Amino acid sequence: MSTKDDFERGVEVRSTLFGEERTRQSLANRDPLNERFQELLTSYCFGSLWGRDGVAWRDRSLMTMAIVAAQHRFPEFETHVKLALRNGCEREVIIELVRHLAIYCGIPTGLEAFRTVQRVFQDSAAPGSN
Image 1: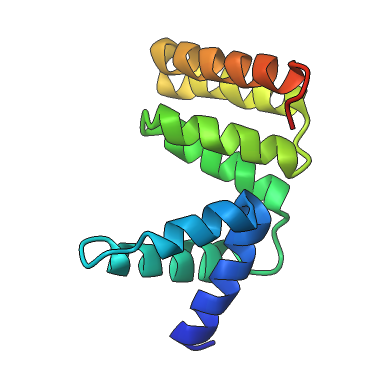
Image 2: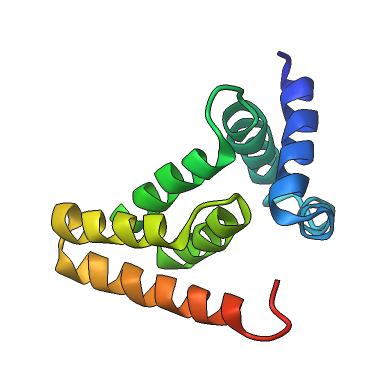
């Protein structure tokens, strides 16, 4: 697959995962400073990685949540909890992931992850939420 193919597939995957409007906005707002980063993100993260066959997006969501939480990237973790729910991940599985985080990454990491998950679950249960 060429870099152009990866980019086009990445736009497709990114649009499916995060919505066409958000993807279009991210790509439209490129400037000389972030243009190459947006291309890298779209081509490699979404085109080459998330666009690969063989692993369901639900499972990719679980892997990504574990990685970003272990790195204490909780705004990104929140994004991926929301994405995991859209990708069909059950709430109890997400809670189990947080239990694993607490043991393998430490209680403070687990607590912060739990607070984030709790907030996302509450927000997604609110009337009018997606």
